[in-house]
Image 1 (cartoon, one colour):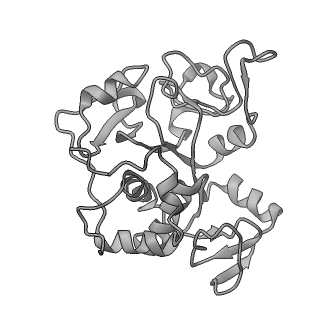
Image 2 (cartoon, rainbow, N blue to C red):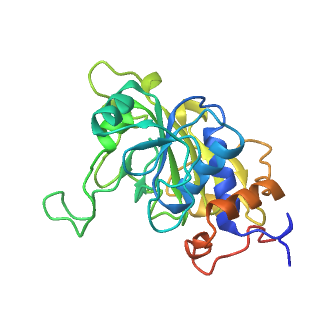
Image 3 (tube, rainbow, N blue to C red):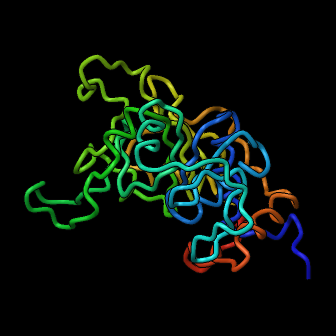
Length: 267
């Protein structure tokens, strides 16, 4: 039975919503960290922003994204140029990149944590990746956040346990920076879509996924967010989008990314 527009998974809804983050970027290097963000960037490249470029996760620039296959294959890909580490860093520092990342913690300022949880920095309760590229990336180019499970464990009440990236916190701005230099774009979760364009750079609600209420979002967020008077429902994937996603993920790995692979419309 062919899938109709009414039959879509939450993962597919989130992919389509996340693709919108790249719509107006023009010619930039898009990086989606994780399977669903990668599919979102690939979908955007195939549909709404053909000027985007991606890498093959090794060293080649692609004008046609690799399908998810579990391995990198250069065969059949439209390769534009070689892009080794030196060129990657030149690109990152020039600002011509938009990364979609999945932080473990996000606070009211948009600061994020992927390093450690609880305790002290010297003796955390949970040791994670370390700050890695977050400090330099967040001061150099645009970033969006992808959160598979919206909860107060992610959207924390206080500052992140370890602040790994810059946010709209005037107390932590590097010398010579202003709040206008910070570029945090969209936040896509399993409940809603948000951005940081509320009053005084508050996190604000842009749309609710079908079947989700404002109360659910507020109950699962550890700090105040701005809720406009009218909040629309997140747009359902189109048939074209679903077909493109299926081509990009022929093994349907997207169905294994969210617990129990819930439907996109939970009404």
